Length: 623
Ligand code: GCU
Image 1 (cartoon, rainbow, N blue to C red):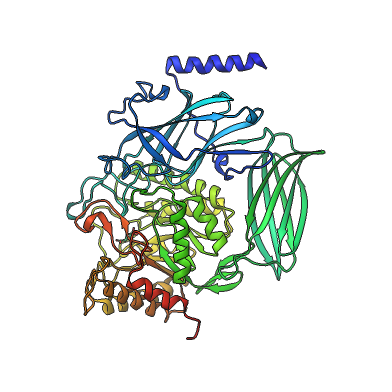
Image 2 (cartoon, protein in one colour):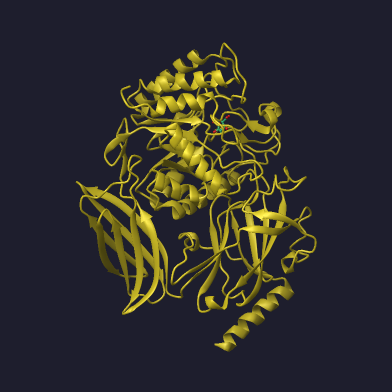
């Protein structure tokens, strides 16, 4: 055994000296299970102040900054770098993060991993100067094994090279040449600030040699009984898995044997207490790995028993129609940027309850896992979106294929992460794709070509292969091709009649919305959600006769859209854009580098429209 370790050390030393570096691409399954502390597993949160150094000339790797930063500043993790330190707000480049962490002797005999909740956009990771792995794509977690690189009972250096360069081949799409009057800075083909950095928590965690690798839970109903199927994937010698489901005065148990490291089990729950916004009841599932008399590993997770389906007019939750009332949101707060803040997450949910909302879309990227756990506990329905915003189809096939590969990568990583949340009812595979990036028009309808149709067919095929238990959609832009919308289980459209078109004319806009809703339903016979509608309202701007950018105009437009929706039996949801004001790139249509369409201000104070929505969404039915 000692000889093997010696060979490992010699190889890794050689790697440092020669500079030959072997970065592995981490397997999705490494990040499937959120780190959990128990008798078999350990977790260490690395949130705090890290060392930080800009790498303007991209010389860090050749100069081996992973052996220790020479002239660093301080930076908070989690957090976007842009608003923390002077002079780097618009910096879209390469930076280095570094932290020392003590790995206790008590972790010996366990496998040690490092997990990032998200790094925007690309990361390379070293431990004690030894290359570990790399990952591309923000807003989703990745985890890498570092067992061979660490030394126990001493400090270990974590080095991360983070790159956030906007490119047309990435999602979200950016880095395109200026587009005339509507170009913005930093050059982003999306309407939110392109923050970068280690924006979510970082953990070290351990698992035993014989470990649970992944758990997939699906629930169905058999009249009043719940049926919970559990798929357990493992590594190591365990022969069996045991699952225990507790809740609603029940304790139900079963075992299953492994074949090719997979065990499938099913538990029937008599008279199950179902999960819904009115009663977000969660059962407690415990999965245990067994080898004869030995218990080798254990993992616990909350699960909600519910079903989701559609008919031609409605979304059905547990077989009953449900209307989504809520918002498109952003992860956005002053100084934090897109950095995880638990107080802000808690505040957002308390405001969602205050206003009477029952859902939101994670526009335009997956949100921190804490959002998803709270949505399960609070009974908020989630449309979970990959960062595919700014897609277009009139550049070369190679770039389109690169964007498709990025979308498929993120679909797999998102389903891998969020597949067990009862709150997630629909996957959104793109926001506002446009046929042409050069001559986009709001009026009329663009036509879909075979390239774009095949692109989206591939995305839908992928998401249904990953998870056939939920709905899927793409969110259509005003003026976008109808053919794309038809691929969705629910027709989802963003509409700005009365704002970007029919400007200043709310009633004319509402009439056009009504007409188009009838046309779309007549064409597709599917339920429709208006996933965005609203107007900018600069906080505190008022007028006696509603005028654009005033709070009165915002309230009037929102009311007009809700009144239209109330006349359509096939409208299954209305999501106001947006929950709160949020930061954008600079541009002539974004006063102060902000989008003011929030019904709450950026620091979460209600505007007039918030009070209107509260009165509308919380009044008892029939009143
Ligand atoms: C679009 C887009 C949003 C954007 C909004 C707006 O619908 O999806 O990301 O912020 O319009 O222009 O305010």
